[in-house]
Amino acid sequence: MAMPSQPDPRPESETVRFDIVDGVAWVYFNRPDKRNCMSPKLNRRMLQVLEELEFRHDVQVLVLSGEGSAWSAGMDLLEYFRMSEAEGINATRRSQREAYSWWERLRWYEKPTVAMINGWCFGGAYGPLFACDLAFCSDDAQFGLSEINWAILPGGGASKVAAELMGFRDAMYHAMMGENLTGKQAAEKGMVNESLPADKLRERVQQVADVLKKKDSHALRATKWAVRRVREMTYDNAEDYLIRAQEALNDFGGWETRKEATKQFLDDKTFKPGLGAFDKNKVQAD
Ligand code: COA
Image 1 (cartoon, rainbow, N blue to C red):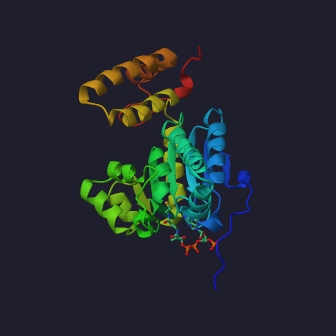
Image 2: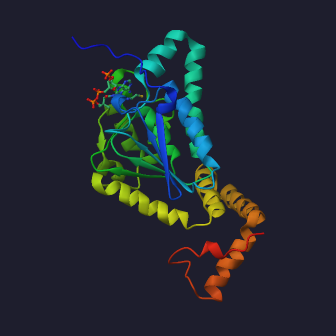
Image 3: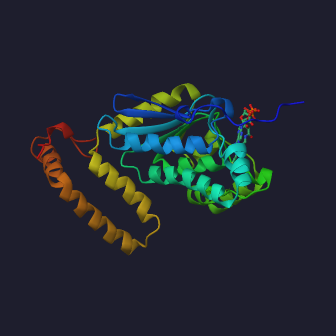
């Protein structure tokens, strides 16, 4: 007879791993033997790691990936669900809070974020998937709202993510049928930006990170927040919000940056905005 699963003895500090290489923080779900499912320990550690990396000067872009064959197999059915629920409603709410709070932190992160989905991506993992600004996956990754297969609904934001990222009929089919999408199908449906052969995935994400690193960081943050905010606004509210957001941007160095970028185009003729970013290293620090 198979041995029932036991709580993972891995210390909390080891449930997430990261390296910082040349301005990019590569953060990994690090429970490969449990397919990187999210336990309360992992959720607590991930929030700490994200908070630590958010304001570091040596981090310009954050990539979230998984060790082993999974990106993340969603919530941990043993440690997140069964064990929290056995303790009662307060423990359940606490576990939810621990998970949702790092996804929220990631949705409104100061730095650009990229999901690099190397394998399984199920249920609760749609929270961090949506939280990342951009997403690239390998062709052999698999995406699923498996909740219906074990008699719950896609909670933890997962239904919302499917409805946000896919068309209505696709979201319904995905949530009701409990069938998986391959990386390529996920890309066709708009769940990720691109799907690539597994051995090309990291190289492509590195390329994207290199482009992001060249952009003005304040403008990038204002842009990614704007795209998230305007989704839920009327056209007129969005127009007004964007005026205010640009004015706020002007106030923290934005004028100087724009003056320099405009000069590089109009006077120095050293770059064309339609073809790439200006040289931000020439902006005079105040
Ligand atoms: N919660 C708890 N444990 C999980 C888990 C999850 N979401 N996903 C995987 N694991 C555990 C397994 O129980 C197993 O533990 P054990 O070594 O103690 O037996 C270990 O991780 C390896 O998983 P296994 O199922 O043997 O790996 P696999 O490669 O054959 O299959 C999956 C991978 C992802 C298809 C399969 O593990 C699975 O269906 N997981 C659940 C996915 C899910 O429904 N998530 C939604 C939650 S909201």
